[in-house]
Length: 310
Image (cartoon, rainbow, N blue to C red; front, side, top):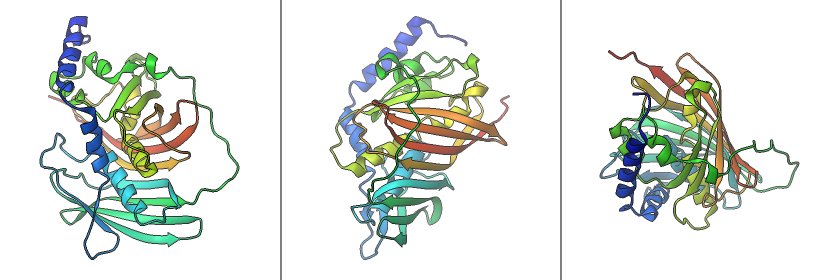
């Protein structure tokens, strides 16, 4: 199939909206916020757990979840006057949402201006993920940034639901899964596959209020930073998440926080890929507020393997 008829697209959209109408956005957003409510291990310093989920719609834990959780675990051991400014992480094994997670924080450095933490995440006694995060007390200094590219505003971009509904490569089963209500409002701008381009962008805004805690907003941004970034290396090859035989997963992830973050206001994730080869791809992301302020940067390497079908 190369195209879907307008009637087929409308039928998909109507079906998804009917299903999502019964799902409260606040409940979906609250489920993400609860990911950051880690339980301290009684009688043990700097160790936290997160319980198993009773049911799950995923084969494995979403990478953005464990990035955000590990960052929050590290932040809970740092003086409140220091904010996270960078993190570097490696995905070692796939996690299972139906099993609990254990977070061990190592206090590697505490200085007057900076602090550094290492977080080791285990499941079933095996390390599945590790993260190093650096925190800084706010300080004045030189400032510059690369200007935000000339982008369409969110109102002129395609709603994520409409974009996947019109994609003939997305099967009906995949569509029903991808079209479920999400914690963010999403609006896409992707080049046509024929362009062989590597740059795309997506506007985000959290779908329900989350309060004013800066760490919660940073946690949501870290969560979102793993949404769509790896697809940048797929674009020039005409691939996407639903391509038959494609296996993709994140290998590592780095992120830098530059300015105050509020995810309840529109922000845009401008993504690109410099290189792919050896079954891997490099992906870069710049995150801007709507006013053009660069608030974060991300780089991720991912595994991309295409297994011949038939």
